[in-house]
Length: 351
Image (cartoon, rainbow, N blue to C red; front, side):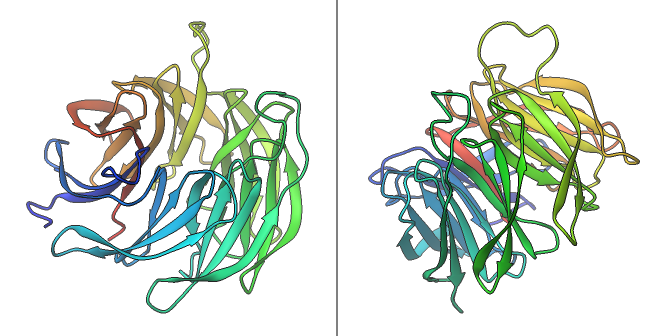
C-alpha cells in the first residue's frame, strides 16, 4: 500500500469503540499532502500509539476508566491492522505507551490510576501477564491537578538500563532500574512545585534531557549520566512568547531532532509549535520561533523522515504537515491537512 515513496504513519483518536479509532495514513514527501489508507474500530480512546522497531506490530493504549493495552499486527500489504491481543492495565486512563530498546517489554503509564505497568512481550508480539506494576504516592501544590499522583509518560533511557516516569501529580521524574522486567526504584528528581512534568526526550548524544512541564509552561533542561541516571537541572525556559497574555495554555509534547540541533514543543492554548536551538556545547536552549498549528489544542506531534513535522490538533480534528528546514530547523506550513475525528497521537511507521 506504500506507493510513490509515501511515508506511513498512524493516528490515534479519542473515539468510541464502535467508531473508527486508529487510522493508517500516508504522507507524500514531495508536497506534504496526506491521505487515509485504512482505519480500525473496536478500541476506545486510542490516545497513544507505538510501533515496534521492525514495523510489524502496533501497541496502543485505550484511555478509559478500565484501561487496556491493544496489540495489532500491521499488514503492510493491505495497510490494515489485525487485533492480536489486549490486556487490562489495572489502572485508569492509560495515556502513554513505549517499548524497551531490546523490544522485550511494553511500558504503560495510567494517568488517573497513579500507577505504571510493565508487560513482557511474547515471541509473536502478544503480551504476557504483567511483570510489574508500581503505584506512586503523594501530591503537590495545585489542588485541581495535583491532588494525587498522575504518571503522564514512561520511557526507557538511551542505555536501556533505566526507565523514567514523568509524574505530573507529584512534580517528579521518577527513575527506575529495569531488572528482568521489574522496575526497581532508583531515585526521584524533584521539579519546582506546580511544574507538572508531562513529556520527556533525550538528546541524541545522551548527554542532555528535556522535560515539558504542563502546568508552569516551561522546559526543564538536565544533564544526564547514563551510568547513574543522574539528572541535574541546568536551565528552565518558557514555552510561550514573552508577550503572550491571551489566556491559559499548556505544553504537551516535546521532541529533539535527529541531528540534535533543534528541540520542538507543542502549546495547547497558544496553539503553536515552539522551536529552540540547542547549544551543542552546553545543551541549553534558545527559543527562536513559534509556528501556529493551524488548529486548536495540539496534543501530540512527530518528526518524520524527509524533513517533515506532523501535528495533531485535538479540538479542531485536523493533522497538519510542516516542512522542516534542515539548516535552520524552521517550520513552514505546507498548506496540507488531514481531517480526522479528535486526533490525539501521530506515530510514524518505524521502517
